[in-house]
Amino acid sequence: DSGVTQTPKHLITATGQRVTLRCSPRSGDLSVYWYQQSLDQGLQFLIQYYNGEERAKGNILERFSAQQFPDLHSELNLSSLELGDSALYFCASSVGGRAFSYEQYFGPGTRLTVT
Amino acid sequence: DAKTTQPTSMDCAEGRAANLPCNHSTISGNEYVYWYRQIHSQGPQYIIHGLKNNETNEMASLIITEDRKSSTLILPHATLRDTAVYYCIVRVPLEANSKLTFGKGITLSVRP
Image (cartoon, rainbow over all chains, first blue to last red; front, side, top):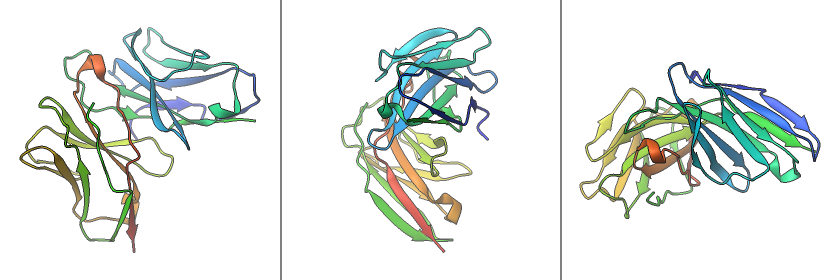
């Protein structure tokens, strides 16, 4: 158990809909990262937040957005869903706030199926 | 981040050492070598990291060549639960650039 929690575990929705994925980082971790894993693209970095502020952006679509709240949990919002958005979405956390950030700890993921 | 090259797959017998190679010939002086693994559809799991010295922890050992252009992850006594995709990643662990860039990894199959 990494200490990172994600809900829901599974999500099935229709094209065009909007969903919210939730992540709670390990206690004390200030940085949260979101990754997408699909069969054809592998594990891809989407976005990073540190202590409530966006820190880095990766291959995140404009239809996707994220935020980190004062209690440090994070939400990833996916809208106008397409079939190709079906994937595993992982959240990771690290201590952050230092010059060097070594390990990232991953949650169990949310499996999104768009039908 | 420097690119890494790993074989697609390998297997080993349960109880034997599994030696997983990784090439990173363009690694920069301030880049670390990291290993993560992903057991079928679970979240990736951090294993070990190193800069230039060999490292060992309760999970594995990491051997980095003197020129730092390649490394080997060693699982000393592989078990069936070690069957997973293993990712070798090189990066500078700065907070400003903390993303992990995953390649295809190497699929390790441990056979009984």
